[in-house]
Length: 62
Image 1 (cartoon, rainbow, N blue to C red):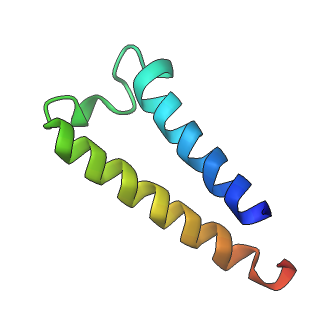
Image 2 (image 1 turned 180 degrees about the horizontal axis):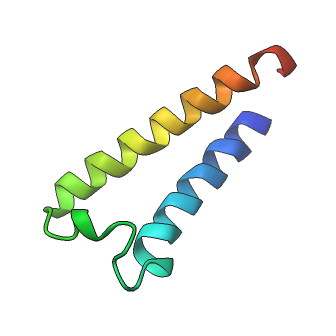
């Protein structure tokens, strides 16, 4: 259950940062010209890599 919550927090934070908090395009402006499919693939990849980093760093505590 904890891992599911962690992945949910990672997913929500990435999407909120890209689509809501970065209104001026300073952090994620370089993907603005990408297609919707490209953005989706990037976000999914980012979440997967973030999840692997989380699991790698907290593996001994799980």
